[in-house]
Image (cartoon, rainbow, N blue to C red; front, side):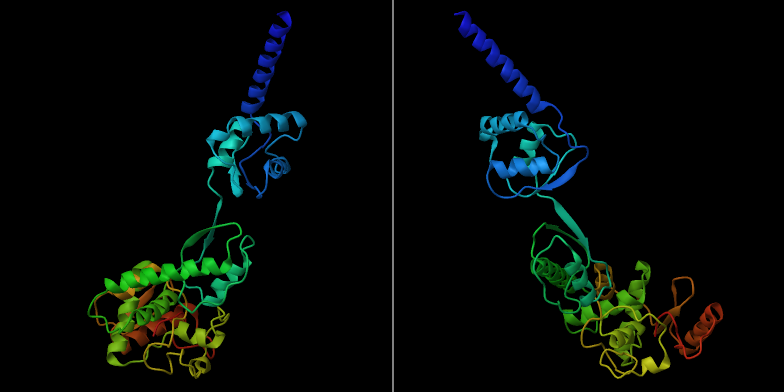
Length: 330
């Protein structure tokens, strides 16, 4: 009888020690993402030990294995990249393995990037897999996307394209019915020019109105960013001021030599630029030029515009061979 009691005491003491190890804080010094590979319990435990989440000693391994079995009614363990909190106990670890959400990684696509620049960002992301083809210009929506480790690059680009398609459809449906644009594609083309012409949200509807007025009158848009796109083939910045020779470049994208919109967008415009074209400001302005303080001056007459151009030259100093309106604007 005494032997049975002694075994019971020892079993109780062992269970108490095991529970203490199960609930005591672990060795992980800071919240850390860790990839748990597919496989059995052994591969999971090995990954936890390599990541410093679980102590690397036989006693803790035995307790952890026992805890897995004793709590198996709580759910299966998952293989994924998971976030483990600092000093996670074995109980915390099992909760993450069973109920934690996979780590989502952000990728921000800024407004105004070309398709080549966007593809470069996607290709440079080290946690994605495979290759993505070059999307069409203006087909991807600038915003922040979240993806899981191991996601295919082509799948992420597909999400970007679907997001743009949905937003363009929504904006086009709610547009000002008086717009002289025949389809959503033209809206995106003009929005891409507006995106590159000004970084000030409050100016975008005004810039859109200038270009829409010019389109109605059959005037050339004379937008510097279209010339830059023609010269760089969508690679990005030109890296120098435009010259008069640049403006004579024969390209369907150069709106200094062609009338109307370019054949395709020159970048991926953001929602603000899409909305600015869909709901432009009112007015008869046909010209704008940089004011020298980050904004633009808008006018309806060429004389006033030339006066503003001259004022800008005095602020910046004219350069030999420089375009007549450095900094943008027809």
